[in-house]
Amino acid sequence: MDNVLLLPKAQAKDASIVFQKVVTYIQSGNVFVDTEEESPGKVGFIIKQEIFKEFGHDVPVIVIGKEDLQACLDRNLFLNEAEIDLKKLYVSFISSELPDNMITQLNLNFIKPDEIQLDGKRIYLKYDISPAKTKLDNKWIEKSMNVVSTTRNWNTVKTLLKMFDDSFIYNYPIFFLQFYQISPISYAS
Image (cartoon, rainbow, N blue to C red):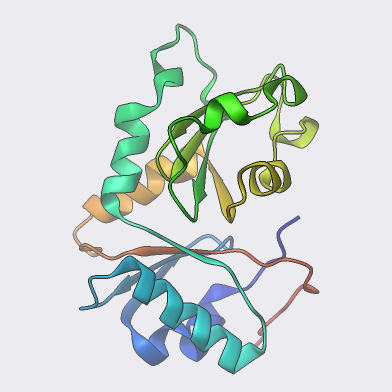
């Protein structure tokens, strides 16, 4: 289970140290920033380093660009299915691109009746019942594929893409921050 970092207060302590125009969306680690840095890896490293310096927590950071979110809409084959229930669609963003043959190496019987589709640094998930009643979770993805993973529901993916298109958000990277084995943190004013 992800622990919550209340980003509006935290942004003043971490992201704004290095970046300007920090915008957050819900309290699950969706952070937009304006930066001149073009390397997603370097941006992620800077954010991770600042969080560690300020809070003492080693937090995985995955940097997602607009093109990654757009690819979710363009390349998710589950969307082609008749009568697809969008509430059962999710996307896991992962830390490194998977080899093309990864799907043949996975034990997909373990996650049935849920389904996955691999797409570079994205994994499209279709749950048979719900993400609360599955073996197909971040823990399984990370262990099976040796990656860091963070998952968003379909509504959040569409909202984040819309935020990129809105006039107050330009071409900011998104940072998905995910905490592991940390007590819940509250940054009250």
